[in-house]
Amino acid sequence: MDGGQRVPLTESFRTVDSFKKAFSDDLDQAVIEAGWRSCSMEEDGVTYKAYFRPVLDLVMALLRTRKVRLWSGDGAPGPPTDRRETPMDGDAFRLCETELAKLPGRNCVLGLHVFSDSSQLSWSGGNFCHLSFFCWVFCTMGSTLSHPFRFLICMIATDRHVPDFDALFAACFLVPRSPQTLPRAYPFGQRGGGR
Amino acid sequence: MRIRLVNVEGDAEWFTVAYIPVVKTLKEPRGDERARIRRSNVLQRVMYLIFRTTAAASHKGFELPVGEDQTVMAFPRILLYICDQPEERAILCMKSGGTTYPCSSCKVAARDMVSAAELTAEERDVLQTLEKHLEATELANFGEDRPRRVALESQESINSAIPSLASFAGLSTPPFLLYKMVGFDVLHVSLDSLTSLLDTKDFLLSLTESLYCACT
Image 1 (cartoon, each protein chain N blue to C red):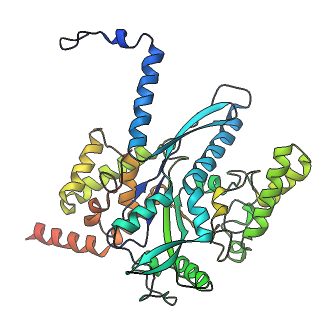
Image 2 (spheres, rainbow over the protein chains, first blue to last red; image 1 turned 90 degrees about the vertical axis):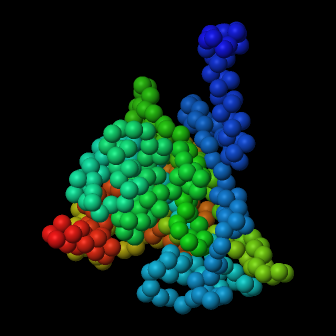
């Protein structure tokens, strides 16, 4: 009980279990209000809880709110090309377009890229390697890096809390065009969603 | 797990769509093996949850309005799955280590890897492999014909489970991209990512400028 609170915590929550359940319920409510769903699944006698949102809902929302290009060519599927300026120039996208062109009517491909790091990243000691790598980058290329990137390196090097460490690396290594563009590709926050 | 819609113009935007539960190894008989199976099953179930409606739409399509009174049929397709090698084996329901065929996209034998035989190795047949997945899973579910199931698993280095992404059109239907969609997470190939980073034109230009400034 603190100065501003007359009723002690134990008055509202008689047991530790009731406190945990209340906390869990609040978390569930927040998740649902944010448009997410939760699912409890039992696997070999152990119950796990997953939080998710259907990809199709997200795709529909993106189609409503973003400017999209539906075909690789001008208003129609484009021919195969050696150009690799966007993912829509890739063979996979154009192969899918070619297959859909065989169907009647006007059809388009909505290409999805998926990224996940569920299996090994947190166990592999990779964080230490990445930290070493970042320190090396900072020491050798510090003068050529932009300020946000330096700030991120400092945050990591000084063990400060980074909201989404994995997403940081996803941004830095999967999307980059050049070191100067790295911070722009950082996917969490309002646009990408944090952990 | 994050996704990106490549049709969106402008900067790449990644959106988180699922948080996959951490599956710990419990202190129990055959704990390591059971945890591995649990981990694999939970991953497949979460993927099914998030892609269930999208997989249906990838076959049937959905109407997308363009212009004032026109519509086109839109078909979602997974073009790229970025992950590390152990996860690649997990999402494709393949054995992760000590297998005869450790490559997910071709049938090169483990003893022939890092040799010329790798270049001429036969590609994995998507339909044939998925049929073996189905048969092995059915045998495992009913607890029947264990020798046959073990033989199926060893023939293709697969597990007795069905990859949920196989329900997607384009992966298990033409152009059959199931075993070609995986791109490794370059975080785990630090040297390559470093080399590519250093090779960028912008970086070289800025480095040259910095050196020039330092010299003058």
